[in-house]
Length: 171
Image (tube, rainbow, N blue to C red; front, side, top):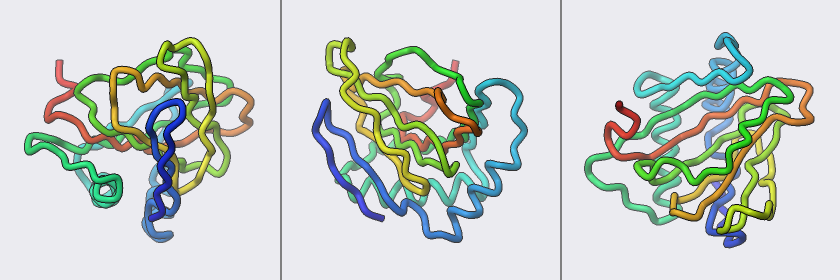
């Protein structure tokens, strides 16, 4: 795993070779086997083979970025499949109970995450699309971002791996 730190428009990191090639291929085959039920289909995993592969790699990534999780935490994996042309259109800074988010590109082609200035007004950059890699950040009040699948001709598939407070998305 190779991690590159960036500071503009706010601190975030770029990752290459998040998984070994065998594990990445297993994740890709599994993700591609999931049905598409809408323009954006989200499959949340909290246990199982795919979750465990991604969670182990996330703990290695946390070591690389020198982030120590609190005792009461969990790793949640969300496998996203987004049809071409879909857009979230919601500049956001994530749930405050999500501490670290990493978006691993699964599909061969896709669109990176759009990063905005701290005032949410200006798009500074779109991160690179890196299969078996991607981009992530430690959540802060001003880590404004958005994402979409505009301009694509195939499904944008990602694994969103999150370190969060235990029960972070419970109602």
